[in-house]
Amino acid sequence: MTNLLTTIKTRRAIRKYTDRPVPRETIETILEAARWAPSSHNRQPWRFAVLTATVEKSRLARAMGERLRADRTADADDPADIENDVQRSFRRITGAPVVIVMCLSMAEMDVYPDARRARNEWVLAVQSVSMAGQNMWLMAHSIGLGMNWVCAPLFVPQLVRNTLKLPPDWEPVGLMTLGYPAESPQKTRQSLAGKIMWNGRTE
Image (tube, rainbow, N blue to C red; front, side):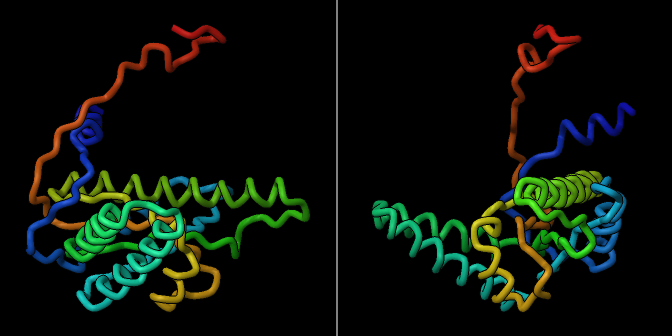
């Protein structure tokens, strides 16, 4: 229990990686950890698109960058800030040895006729994929690798699906970069005071 808590407490979002490649069997170990995450109805709606080739990572980064530039230009943002944002996004994706695009599939989830329950079922799938991502992150950290969750695909799922030629039912909701860390970021956490209710009372 203590070792697990230490792993949880020392996990960090890693955005800079060395050039050292990650062996395929190591990636598969991390994906195996994801496979054992909890999921709604045990439907396991997660899907993973693994990118290790520079050309594939660059293609995705360029496509997402172009959309980011267009969206922020339409928002009338400062052009210099836009270009800095686009370049930062490109470096973040292409600078990682491995990119794992996190997708969900509703193919085996429950189907409802009304929008409220249908939306909630989609949220359940997102929660399941997120728990799989957390398993991957902790597994990677425990064996000396780093990861980071990037939420950008959630804003452009169709673009990511088309760029990577994913199956029609694969809906991108995020991506995780993976590699050997080239940084050791520090992080603090707020106290739990005021964030917990015991039997209806906040302490």
